[in-house]
Image (cartoon, rainbow over all chains, first blue to last red; front, top):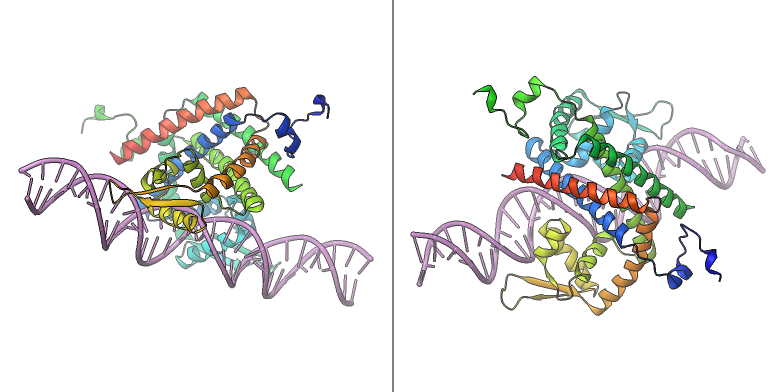
Length: 172
Length: 172
DNA sequence: TGAAAACATTTTATGCTTAAAACAATTTGG
DNA sequence: CCAAATTGTTTTAAGCATAAAATGTTTTCA
């Protein structure tokens, strides 16, 4: 096998790995750091939501999606947006309907579809929580300059695109 | 209360918010993008670990910690490193001992402490998985240039420090 | 038209995760 | 020395999460 036949981005690394056991330690470290940041912030937000509002993060996240959709969303939409499994949404919605935060109805045009939206109570509670939530986030990122924020946005957009491409390659 | 007593970074934003309802939309968007990237990559890694090795991500993460500690770690150490609750580790370890991947013993000098380490089997299996895992990560980040990686590392380090500071302020 | 494919959701089985309380062992300070 | 505080772990109760199979509905297309 000629050395020049090396291609970039090949997933089947069988032969490649034998020839050149490449060092991906930097990417690995980057991934761990990304994960650490997210875990740290997520844990902080989770704790504050529980302490101040006695609400879980998943419930808050779901309400956040619905707050942006006054006409409601289908369970599938929610599932895709939140990047969680369908079954997960089913249970989450169940509990939020039970607590009076969500309203759920079957679509008139397609009886497979469930449309959910925030109740008046749900919207009011979410708005209160969201206001505090925003200040928490601002505080957690307080040491970043506006330039840092812009730069991170850019690099994370690139990261997201790269990961999506890779995920697509695998499914293909 | 004198007006001059206002301090920066105050979490009690009662009066401040009324005066200047500051806009933190950028930080919020940054946080959501960070979360999206992590969720995306994590889901991808989780799926591949399950498909190729029939192992869960938490199990893999725990084994990864132990692989770096040939002499073993206490449950507390693991819990801190993985940033998960103590009870979480208890259950995870239980199952990994059951499956023969981990060895657990009570410390001789302090009978409260449980020391766990990888068994020969556990280490062998982890090494196999880790090799693949590294190529997956490299592929997921493939579109980032070395410069991008360095810059992201730097900005995420800054983010982590900022978040830790904020978390500390709250606990204080 | 009508069987097959696609779709939206729910169910099932299993495992992960947390916060808080309980338990057990060690350390500390009067 | 010993009661109190601290530390390490486990237990408990509740909820979150996934993958895969099951259910019911709509669409496709031969």
